[in-house]
Length: 169
Image (cartoon, rainbow, N blue to C red; front, side, top):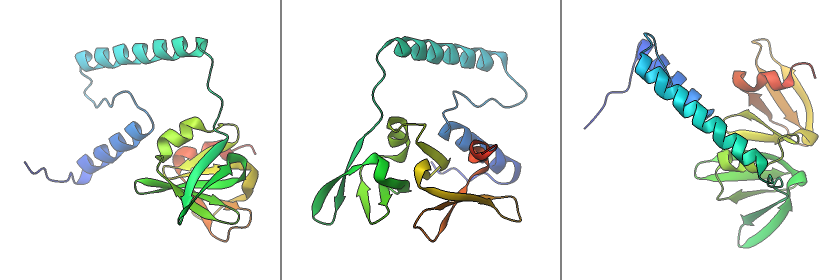
């Protein structure tokens, strides 16, 4: 069964839904609101909140300290504090240090959950940066933010969803 790709207004809804689910949305409700769907969403939200409160009582796992990565024919262990950024690269995640790059088989999404949120920030859906390696954050004439990392020539775009992290800094 082939489905046509949505266009126009429907494409906009489709893209908003994808973005919402990538950020962990429980549901995506459109107008007019159907009470049965809203009730189901509220039920799922309550379940998720009760799971989180149960898990808070358990000892929380330590943030990730080391990353095991392949580089050519060798395997190396990199301390997380030395990693400049993580970049999504298809089925893999590329780790970038000031001297080298390597691939790991861990998806960026699950990797982000294992990192210390005080030290690593997601700046768009494909990049997580180490705050201690940020040289500066700039805003261009169009209002788009860019992160400039120490020792790196290219800047990294900050999506609108993640710009609020940098306000007030």
